[in-house]
Image (cartoon, rainbow, N blue to C red; front, side):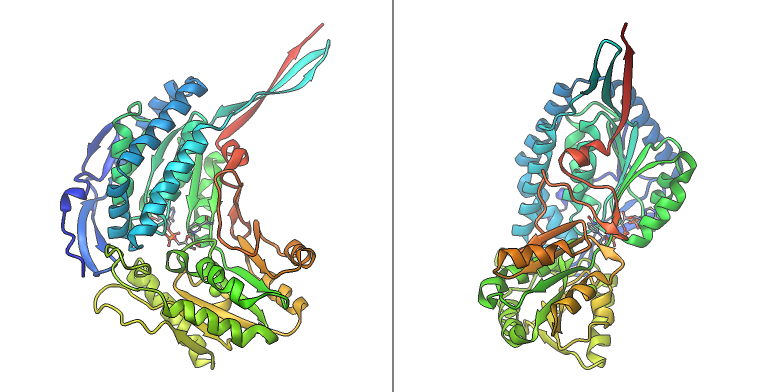
Length: 480
Ligand code: NAP
Ligand code: MG
């Protein structure tokens, strides 16, 4: 077990508003290291009064920031990217300590946060001219909305926060962020770094647990827009509470992405990428591959190849450089995944785990495959969000497509094979926001990402994502 005890890394404050760090006045919340199960640190939640102050701090900053030039906004984002780059290692270590992912993946998360920030800095919000005639000139302008609330989850705490707050500020809004109570430390440190360079009140953060502050943000009339990434149930609650002021919403919710292997696929060529698509971040990724459909003829060979991949993972504390497979982030999630797994086992499915010896403490689980599983097992139908992949055997492609689509979620999906025409044909039939061909879970700053059905509303990334942080205004100027 790593002896990493440098507590100087931990922020000694739990909120930031009016450009100043302070301590919360609410209940105490504990942050746990998932690799040991032990407390890392604790902090006090923000009280309702403090939440009000954070919102009014953002309102005040917005009054100035909404008139900033595109160049000023872009410069600020680039400076934030620079400061994240300077503190890359420190941020990565904080992510590993509170989230559990191996350091290499945590560094990748920080690098992603930097790349997304720079990309967003470079985006344009052009004014389009819809008509230029003797009768009139009509322009379509994009205005900021006001105060944007951001509620990120615990799986990619830094990156998802950046996905929320950078387009918000690039479009001229001010933000109040409420990180997950399970992983607030990296986000708090990020806001501390940002507040050294940003105008006071533009980036505010409050910590809290049990959904209390999130509910207050959903109901608050001074929040013009709320961007949330997390479970579908919480997304529904946010939507129900947001009606009072018709809050703009971007909801990135659960997923249960299907992958379909076509009969002409070459198992040896796809096994590594399939494993990666399913087990990235120990399977705790919204758009990870969460159920795999494989034709009879390739079934045994592909299951064996995937098992080889599982056995090759080095499971342990992510702070150890050699480790490439960390713990599940929290005990509750681990228990949920184990419950789905036992149910599948009781139904007669075969469980193949990587067989690694697991550390005695912490929330560890070996990368696990479940074969010969029924298409309607809970592990297949529900989002497991952990290091286990069910592999369902199919006889006809029509059946596999039907199973893939018979799901309330529609975040992503993938098709694997060799014939380009057949791959496109099947991909076209998948009902989801992103479809990958011979890949899975790749998200890119310039490619809009969002779910269909119960996986969410709206999208992030690219110009489409940025526009969600704006209000359109048509300007109609009468001519002769
Ligand atoms: P979660 O339980 O929904 O919590 C997410 C955030 O919502 C936390 O900050 C939480 O704060 C807050 N919250 C809880 N109850 C709330 C309420 N009633 N109103 C407002 N906010 C509330 O999700 P999670 O367990 O952290 O994350 C896992 C889920 O997120 C999975 O379903 C996964 O698929 C989904 N996800 C989706 C995407 C995507 O892009 N579509 C990406 C990543 C994850 P507290 O700490 O105070 O409880
Ligand atoms: Mg599932």
